[in-house]
Image (tube, rainbow, N blue to C red; front, side, top):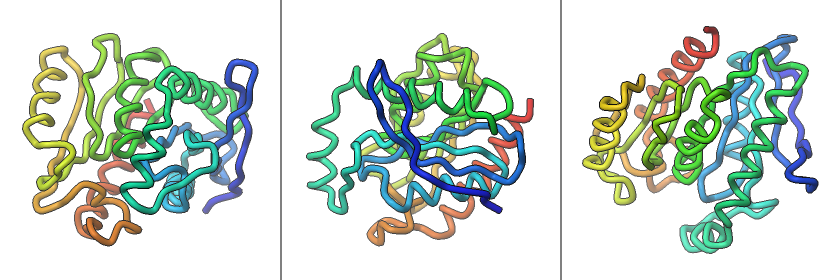
Length: 226
């Protein structure tokens, strides 16, 4: 059961950013950073934090759009186009620091769950902060992973994805295997991009989403208990 949820400010280079925090009743629990898709920090991604808290994690989702959200692809593209890479990197690092320092978080090595755009940044964070990131879960997001990364990786991808092709997923698998990284990727038959997001009626796949969540929780509990 979730003890509390709230928006919290955190420091980024002398400035402030904000994020959504969900904490379980347990006094000490592993931390999980949640990185939203290009829709922004909407109610769906806040619920992801709440669901993680109900599973025994302290979940924190930085708001990379600073209050803005999108409901259509065109709106999302406009918001994404305004992002500045160096600023995003600093804000995610600041959110990581906030989560690590939170009194309810047990241990310094955390998990990261990223969706699409957030998956891209989650994979990047594993290389930027190898000593801090223990486990990374990506939903239909992809990029090259820095060889410095020490995390274990779990990936959820869609068979019928017009943004992330399956051959690109296989290429990343090959690169991770060659680098000796621990990973497990799943491609869900018949699924489309955003298949996990129940508020995207054009893509939501209940069966695939349920299985992906089960795998995610099992993975995070196994890796963050070490």
